[in-house]
Image (cartoon, rainbow, N blue to C red; front, side):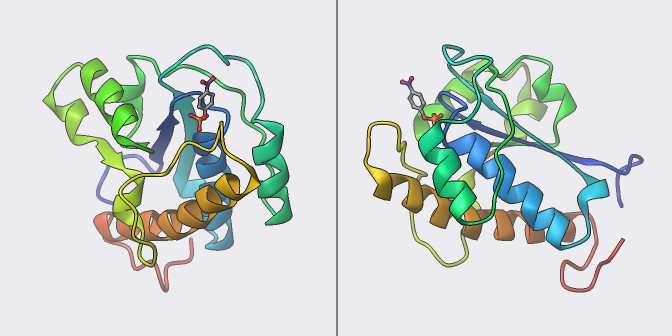
Length: 171
Ligand code: 4NP
């Protein structure tokens, strides 16, 4: 790896950290596990709004994720200033999240770490991951469709950035 430490750190961010970003965390953990790369990654999530701090993922999101084989175990927390130092990439779900995180970023290096989740979609075309909180069941399925696509793309992007072949690399 290019960096002098072995772990690549990813933080997914949405508004409440109970729907989209916990699901992104769960899907990404499954992607790296399937690839045999769990040891190389630290994966976490946070919200720009702290009103759900301490809560598990929304039960509707948990059920939809569980049907696809993902277990969401995270507890909601608000993004902190030291996250900009700790994580290599901070990946947001929509433009509002982008603005909130950008406003908080302490310096230009931190701004460079902010990405939009949909940048990594290889099959779906979307300009953001829509907030499912006030939507019906279909909203959660749309989120998971986008996240599964984007997490695979993100994994490949990180591995290439690290000079590793995502197709063949195995520990
Ligand atoms: P999330 O969804 O940002 O995907 O976790 C939401 C969760 C809670 C609220 C809004 C969106 N809320 O207004 O409490």
